[in-house]
Image 1: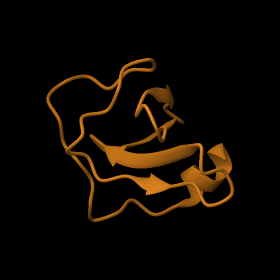
Image 2: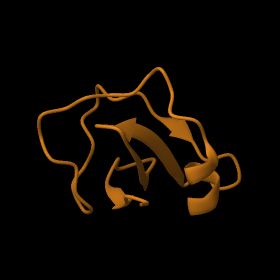
Image 3: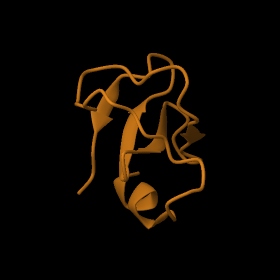
Image 4: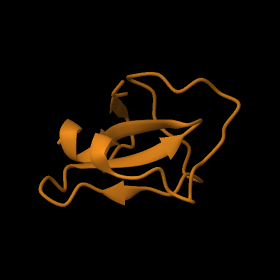
Length: 66
């Protein structure tokens, strides 16, 4: 899943937020998300020039790949 997200191009729907994005905190509802095709439990978004992986239902950040 992490490899898939890292390989995706940075999209034109990148979000910029003032709050720091950290593991364990939910993403704002205004951020456009993309489901992970092979694992619908998770989705990702590009926020502040970083890819962020989170749980689809709760929008809680689980990983910020480097």
